[in-house]
Figure 1 (spheres, helix red, strand yellow):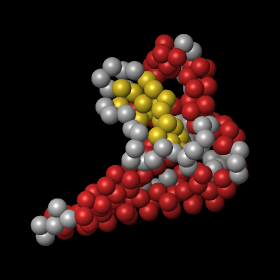
Figure 2 (figure 1 turned 90 degrees about the horizontal axis):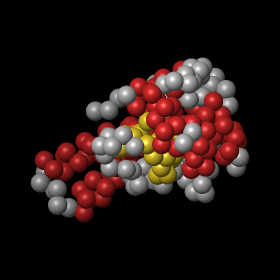
Figure 3 (figure 1 turned 30 degrees about the horizontal axis):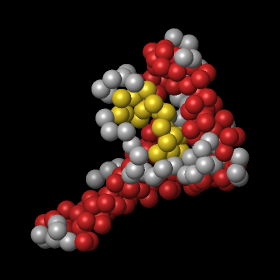
Figure 4 (figure 1 turned 180 degrees about the vertical axis):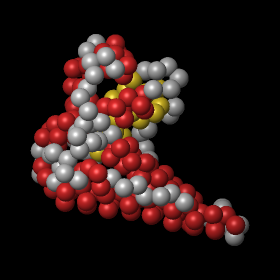
Amino acid sequence: MYQQKSFDHLLGTPGFSDTLLTNHFTLYRGYVTNTNKLSDTLKTLLQEDKGGTPEYAELKRRLGWEYNGMRLHEYYFGNMSQQPKARDANFPLRTALQEQFQSYELWEKDFRNTGSMRGIGWTILYKDMGTGNLFNTWVTEHDMGHLSGATPLLVLDVFEHAYTLDYGLKRADYINAFMNAIDWNIVEQRYA
């Protein structure tokens, strides 16, 4: 059984209204609830020897959507802070970003550009656990487009529910607010 995490400490984050955050937390809680419900239903169907049914198959497919929706929101809220720590110019992730993108600024430009693409989804800075390579990636749906063998380091939600209440269609303004709210200590811990 997955437990809902509280992200109420983010209320008051500059650039994010409490109403927007509260609504977003409610959406996240729905993913946790649905992940638990689907897991329980799938166990019951399996115990009843209904693992080969269309119902089982569809619920099994749906589990990826709910589970990834839960986890991606935990990464997203988890890499934000009401009072973000200043970026250390010498932190190991920054050094790796400079090496792979030629400069930190080019990495950030790529991350922002990825988040500004048309459509809904997620922008994720991934670390390939096999090679250590870093990628800014667009994930359209929770359950599609993830890089196998890669770990999310920094997650930006670019579904409309994450910003339209405060920013309307001004996604770039939302991305600016997000970039100012990143807790680089958390991102660095994920990198390590």
